Amino acid sequence: MSAKRLLEADTWIALQRAADRLLGRLAQTLKPYGVSPTQYNALRILRGAGPDGLPCGEVAARMINQDPDVTRLFDRMERPGWILRERGRQDRRVQLARITNEGLRLLESLDEVIAGYHRESMGHLTQAELKELGRLLASIR
Image 1: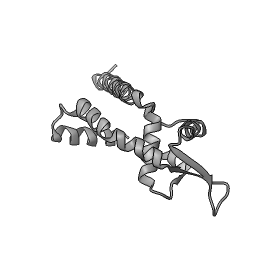
Image 2: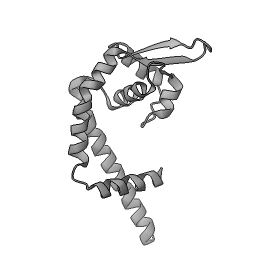
Image 3: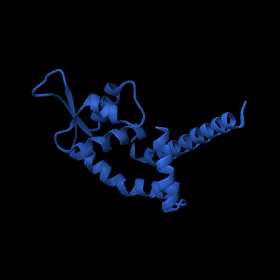
């Protein structure tokens, strides 16, 4: 195996390990609030969508981690009252998801917790390093 191919493989493994560690820490941070990282991601997307909400398929497309069963994810988020789903007015085949006031309150309570998680996991990097890391990750995507 060439040196470049070995470096590519080693770098890929390091990236996977870092992603796994970050996601594991995020899950532990969110656990006391009864929210999974995937649910948190969906709630953030819906908060950004505003009061009109988004079609469920659009939320799924914007997710960081693709969940093969978004319907069940939304079922789990609807039970505690974090979201509402309803049929579209113009196209009844489309199901819209909206964040509720309860979901907004949950996210507001998590905003500072997540900011602390970001500081804990990325605070040791300089601003220049963060920008470079973001640029490198974007080029991989």
